[in-house]
Length: 77
Image (cartoon, rainbow, N blue to C red; front, side):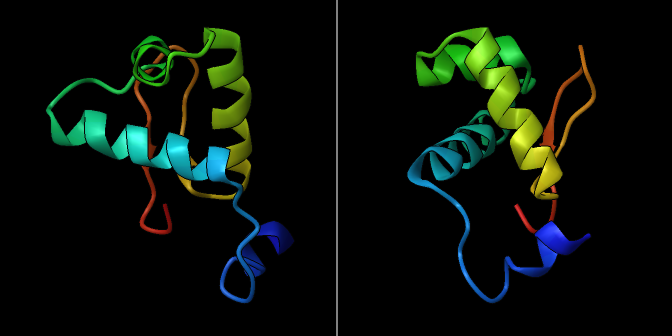
């Protein structure tokens, strides 16, 4: 996966990417199920925005995401 190869060399993550990763981490740490709705509520954004960003993070291999289920950070995330 070429997209993931660049993570070590340069940081392709935006502040928004980092905000989502931090929110996923915090929800998980508090023992909450990390769903699209929970993440949207944590970040005060729409569920549609959350879905789009989580898909991008999954493409970067930072998040494991299955539709209608909880999500988790990968070791890289």
